[in-house]
Figure 1: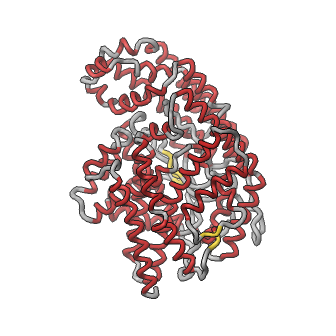
Figure 2 (figure 1 turned 90 degrees about the vertical axis):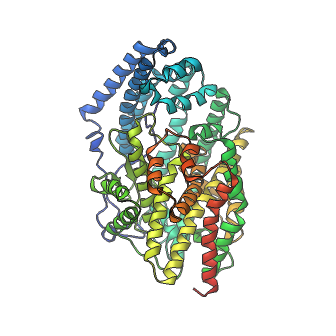
Figure 3 (figure 1 turned 60 degrees about the vertical axis):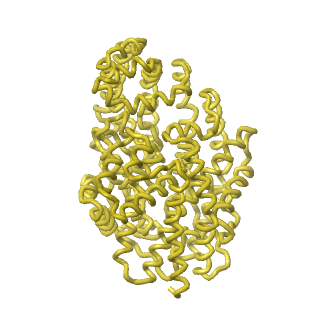
Length: 620
């Protein structure tokens, strides 16, 4: 698939003075990104010029290569040049798509930004449809001819891309159908994604006790507030507003699930998640081994922890809005941006000065957009940009300890993306299963650094509890999300789903995964509605659990002084998408196809809960 970076994102503004949990003054000077390294503005002449250049390059590629690639493959150097020409136009298209997406991400409620994003993606889609022939024709080259051509070094560089392309061959359609799928994506999946983003960005939540309605991010932030009344008020406001809009979110879910079913049927995918596994370059049985291992550990991880937390809060069971509440012994303090910066850079530098140097560029060169603001995309991400420029990080920073961990997480992605950029446009994009490795590793580095500096037993307890909760959210919650998605897509094949049916499926996985210590008050049944991964990237979510368990295993080796660990780790990140997960893990002696691998990662979480239980017995 031609990488054009046509994603759903956002752009910048000032932190509202009444944003819950923190004030602009308390947070310090939050950076807003400078997109000028891509384009100076949407009406800059370079934007129109580069769109025109892409059109010309695509027409030239079509003229020079369409219908000729099979014959051209007899000369490996000529085939390599054709792929290089394709890569060049892919990068320029991706540069345009990246800028449009990031510009839109800053304020999805701005009509002009939305139009610029839509127009740009429409233009890129039209250009991309004329290049579909390249990947189809490359897959028609015989194994014998390709093997001989690969003796040419220039083509050998692209072998991982060619190998991955060959895996897609059974699911490719003829050129006309592929063009139709591409053209219709603008008015099918792409349009419904846009509707979801625009609707969510426009929602405002009437929270009891707040002077003005809040947008999504600060309302979600209330659910980790130290004051239970504010947690409850935030949760009830979320449930009320989601319920008022639930028919729209159900329609979007039904439509996209059906759209995916149609695509899967035409392409010949058997299982509903097979297309995601193919994109992730991971085998279905490996994912199922992960899912089974996590599901088996629900009682010893999430059920056990939440029972203990309910007791800390003085309750037999706790309402769902207490799930991420800070511990009573440790009031949540606001962590100003300069302190957060030093926390993360210090942790990275303790592992490798080179890693800290790469991460420092994000701060110094304005590659981060941190403030919350109306219309801005919720959550956080690190977008790889293009190899010739650099990644960009979006945050909604509110000064909580979890926000610091999110910063460490996204900078891990950023470091990974910088290191992988040398692979070029076609090979730098890491499959999702490995894309979470550096991010979760960055979080763990930061957590361990903070833990080493903590001498007060109660603070240590709060730190460990916070990390356990993050890991439950990353592993248990994401596998439950994956199971929910499977239920949705399977049920949709039997007919359209009502809001009540979607709610019922959501609650079935929540009760199973979180356990009896969580009380699901009315309103929680619609909380599936805001989770964008279900809309933008079906079955993406298991990659988080994959990454967390993988990092737990890697980090154990690091702490045990595994030989030459830092260099091996940098090699893993620098490989980008040029190697399969089995090749990348082999130097560490790890094998994700074995159940023991997943149990090793999960045992780290269990060990932390064991330590918390020992603290409780000791009266801490």
